[in-house]
Length: 123
Image (tube, rainbow, N blue to C red; front, side, top):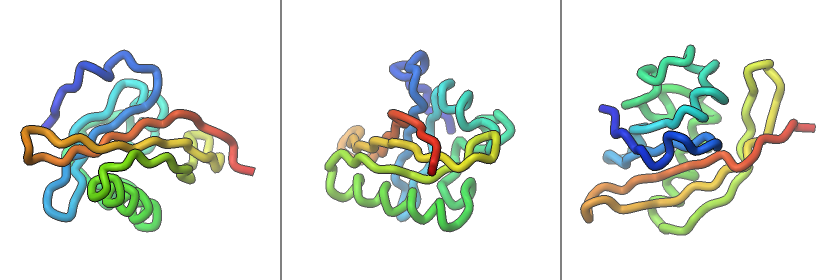
């Protein structure tokens, strides 16, 4: 299922939206900047990402870190600023400066949003 979120279509930073379903956080939306920056990890095909959770997409260790951050934001409702390790399309280790926040839709759906504020080379 694709939830089209027009608010972020032209936003220059990579943004994603997940919905909490049980103990899983299902990706519902990624913007074009996300595809441009990270599409190499899913062959630039958003349908390989939409409807899946972190463990379907990323290596287990990376997925677990993403999951724990999603849980923290969804439970507390407090915006979270974190650094996440990532390997870019040139296979170089980088650090992503990420902010995550929560929204409750229709008093029932917990949404977790994420945005990459910056990307730095890992030293």
